[in-house]
Length: 440
Image 1: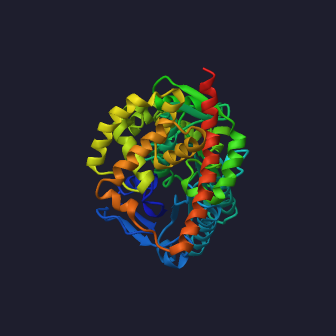
Image 2 (image 1 turned 90 degrees about the vertical axis):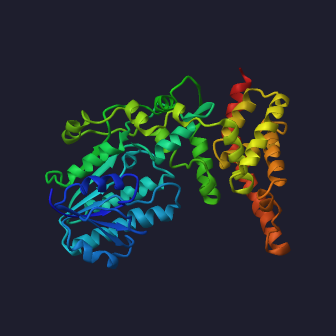
Image 3 (image 1 turned 120 degrees about the vertical axis):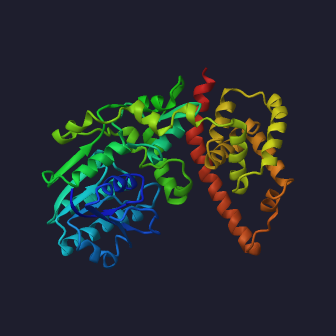
């Protein structure tokens, strides 16, 4: 494998692994487009260009030296629809045009299996990738499009999200749980992409890549959990519609988006080409992926009391508690625990609230109106009392906000609106669990 490769997304979850493999060949030069500071300690055959996909003037000169573009960079996560389109659609078009003008021969584009979903409503990431694919197919370059399935591995955002669901006391499954998935381990995908850079017979093809094992999304969640549990099926369509509405106002703080629910209602499996089938025999299975990723329940367990205290503190004041507060929480909690008289739903609500500050806010919003004597409210009050009387956390609570009366009025209005939306989302999430538990 010789020549020069122009790589985007080189510092990302997948891109960093691809770069490591490409750089092992001293005769292979890799030029990486990055937005931040170049990492240190890279091999001499790796070079970095700082720039943005939508500013071709910053990287066109580097493209003139390359014969292949491997385009991995993308907007993911919980971005606004316009950002997905700006980066994934418009950024890809800008790179395509710059590559054509620079005389680049080949363009390898990493898309997503979600482009195949029949229903991509609210899934703006998949929509933007589909539009990027269409632009690539119309280009004059020798293109290859790669559609990977769910990518697992240490640091995988999708796996971490599934693990948060799988380790709840009741595992929530949106829809009937029968949608099929076919995850691939990140190192296996990186191996395939590296090999593609030296493969000339895939031009004009769309290659779907996934490991050989296919299972339902519900079974995947149970495999991640690695233990017996109860699955709670939630209506996917009403929740998706509600989330789609809430995203306009609360996208950054929502635990899941309407687009992400598409993986629960659409099959994410591949139509394997002969090229992929030849390599699937060397790919890792689900259990091996999870073991290497260290996402099983046993490896993720931490001290529950400390986790509660830390999560509640971040929820209340936006910062971690001191060691003194944690220790006092333990001591007072032992007495509090004997007075709580928790039922099954209370224990579920507490376990959910300890997952993150957002889950704590959701649980508190629900309990404040629909479960006023809940254990989670008492635990939050205990945490607040400890933070209030302990330095340095009391300063965060006693700080006088700026803005005067007008600022206070604005904060009051925004807080009321935020509470209303949080309560609505919490009711959607927790009411089915409460009803289900009350029947048993």
